Image (cartoon, rainbow, N blue to C red; front, top):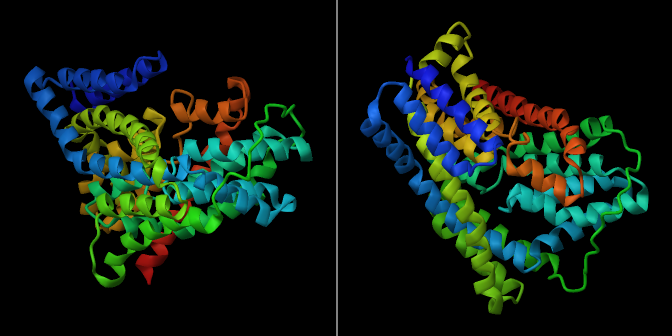
Length: 417
């Protein structure tokens, strides 16, 4: 059997198993093995390719585990909640959608997982929904949109692994996402969210938030700022500080600034637990990436895009969008796409930073489908049933497409000048 078809069958099998509620890690491993065997590579070679795929992403897994310290500190010290409260108060009721979207973007951009960022902001959004008679759907869309914008300029797993597989600086990939994210935020809030029906839909699922126990804003934001500054030293002045160091240092600074040193064990354990889940998922993802990378899928895509002058550029976000749809995960989509297609994209003359940035943006297009955890976690955060939650999918896809198109536009502007 043609290896491209075999790999796609393996990918389809993994999707079906995930939808059937089998562990995503084992689903991906089974799909990878099935793809290798169907390609005619035999058991030994298939396993070797799977192990090779995991080996390729091991450095990124280490950096992702290190990021758990900063993420854990932001959540368990109340720093994330403090940041979101401050933003909502500053923008006020008049700009309620911008307030919740910007809060979620800010949390995601400083290293909080997008689903955790939405869950953190959700109680505030629900209180606003009840007081102002707004719908949960429109507020959730604003939060998800803000989170997607933050995700393309964050030190989150998807950005880390895209930078790693394209062998470029994490800080540069984060910087490449800033302009698309900011423009995307404005368009999301003022053009896409208004498309939603804004009638109150019974937002009684409200969890009150105690503000008095939260640390001050300056202390909450200090840790992420330190981490970002350390990462930016390499492009600014040539001092290279790896994310393995920069992200935990930011977490430690956050502990000290919020006077939460006694809770360090709790914070680190929480962050490690969250990142370990991602790391284990990436092991399964890596096995499938190894099979896809060895298959002829790249050749098929190249043939499809060969008549298009911009084909090599389009391959980065297109492959990532397809893989994020298959896995319903930004991280898994960015992992498989960057591991499988990075060399092809680079060979087409695309700079490593832009290859990683476009891959990262493409992963936001279809990462919200129902067979992934993000769909259910975000819907559950506002008490939404599956049928209600599914109505947001076209709008979320539109936001992901917007971010991808903005990233492509910025790439062409930068290459022209």
